[in-house]
Image (cartoon, rainbow, N blue to C red; front, side, top):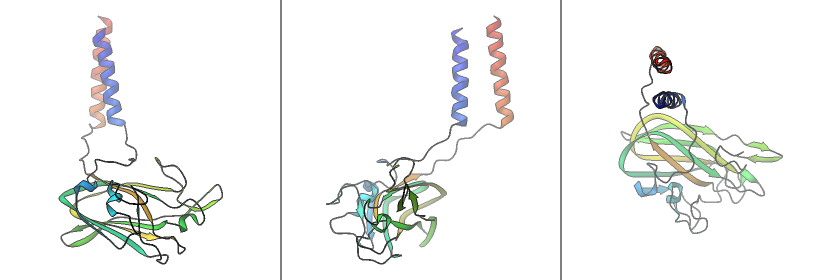
Length: 226
């Protein structure tokens, strides 16, 4: 009888492994873009005392450790950028962005973004991997706000998790288009994680699954009849 229950357990485990699906990622400290993997970094300008490395997991910023704030006094539509080069090439499979605007006053006008773009330098050419317009939300009378994400649900948070077509590169660039024109205006970025591409597991054809299920059920009937 123990063997029967073991086979039932294994059948359930196999099925759950085949049909389970992943969710978006919270902030990671072991991703491929962790600051310890970065050889060099540059930006279009930051607010004083802030460090670009904090976008990638460091805590070097003087005012808000763990956050990076770009320079103020720029007009709406100004494109802030960060560019970084890793010690080694990687093949990117997905990324996770976490940003946050201020919570009082003008909301997204204070440190919000209206557009995000991610690029990779491939054979000396910048290749766009992902781009998205950030649509302002109205949440319980608060407008404009990001609206929150799956892991960071407060309305001042923006979370974007996305798989991309696998691309191998060593140098990357992220662009953040400024939403507002009031002061302070420089966008606040909390984290940008990059995850190495992992080839999908081979999933048996439906016919193979039916044969597997039939074989297991036949085995169980014989054991129960014994």
